[in-house]
Length: 286
Length: 336
Image 1 (cartoon, one colour):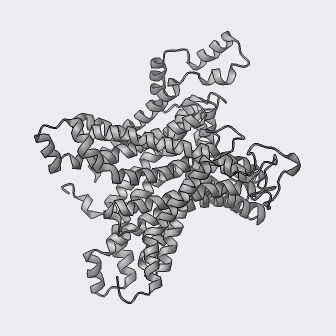
Image 2 (cartoon, rainbow over the protein chains, first blue to last red):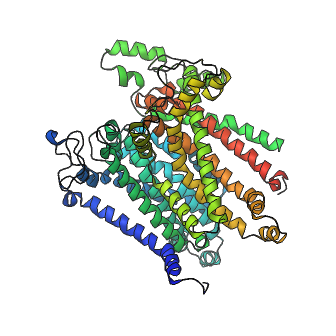
Image 3 (cartoon, each protein chain N blue to C red):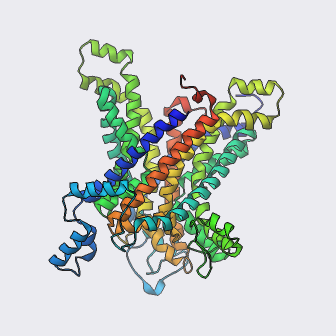
């Protein structure tokens, strides 16, 4: 660090390096807390209608205003993260599990099974994930569970490729060769030597994929492939709010802001995790 | 170079066969076919069986598949089950609007992304660098469909600058030649229609362009940072070259490789994003057509639509590979 920097710019540099990621993490934790305990935070019942009070603009009683049925938009936004966040977390964790199994199998066994698995992953990856997800929902039918399956399925190759690329470098590490020459079983080597060493890049990738999953889940709910109409859900609320752009533009505004802040906080958290866990990228700050 | 291209071209039919077969099977794995889902309310069993026989849906799946493949090889994609319109005609109607939307979006996203990415590295100003980084992570986080609606609220509802939906004004007269309006309207000199067309295109393409520029800016920035630290940049500066020529001629040429790769991938994402964006703007492209086909379980529409999206995507990737060879002389020598 150069000596001519002011205290302010040094604080600024420190802030940029660490604390934005912490703020991202804190905001995301807060969103999760509010979403899980939605009923405790919401001032009104998200489904309660009050036709006399429809299209109310934001006020102290209704901070985000009301929609075409007089339902409180704030309460609906507080409840509206549940379908999307549940679908995204489940999808990413499942894709992580399945992708790890495929990646470890391919990288550890090698040979033609590896080639076959990875070509299959390439074909899946070559397809835009949102189109792949739409097609899967189309074949399985409309619904949040099928949206979850579709997103998870579309993300499997991302994790499989990443895990395989790490495994093929790890199997030639001296400590793995040493363990093998001591007679350790394949399962033991994978559990004790390979899996722990893959964790940092996998955590980084999972956080990046979580941000993508939240975006795709809200888009699928927006085009009507996920939750039922009328459900308090950020994507569905924006879709139903689009009909109100002339009468009550605040109705689509707030759920969209909620998606943006959530994805933004996960992205900042992911960037911070990457900077800490993946030292090769630390200096680039991309 | 030519033998490499030929090798890639051999893969093209194989990829298309794989994509169309996967689509074909995926649609038939799940119980229920389009006739049953749409018509079972109004038809009795015998009528249902008759309609199924017309479409060949009562045959074994293997026979349907062979029939589908033999038609596909001859370029026959069949008729839409819901409307009876030939798929080929629907593709002529729906593909050009989406390609125009995708290309204009790609230009917007590349322009904004590359310029801001280069600026954040080349202009040594912390404020600019920081703003570009913040704007690009924000761009990554904004939901496409919401940005579209917010743009409609600002520019169509409040300022009344642009229409809220569609591809061209309802009362506008124009001749369809290729159905690519950039060509048709300019070739016929129909400037009134052209301006209506542009005003319909601006919001959807800006929506996609803005939300995908973040990726491009981040990647350009990191690629430029890596290149700017290399020896030949120091040499170029030591020779006394202008900074402008160091950046655009020396640094950009190497930073271009990852950017072009990303744009190839982005094109697929933009085609996917078009499904969402077209729905927001009621834009009559492949996206809305495919989505309707999916919801109606119209086998022929989904098959035809996906085969063409895959074709566009594979061709785009080939174009990226060709650009690689043009930009990077090291790749021209096969021994490397």
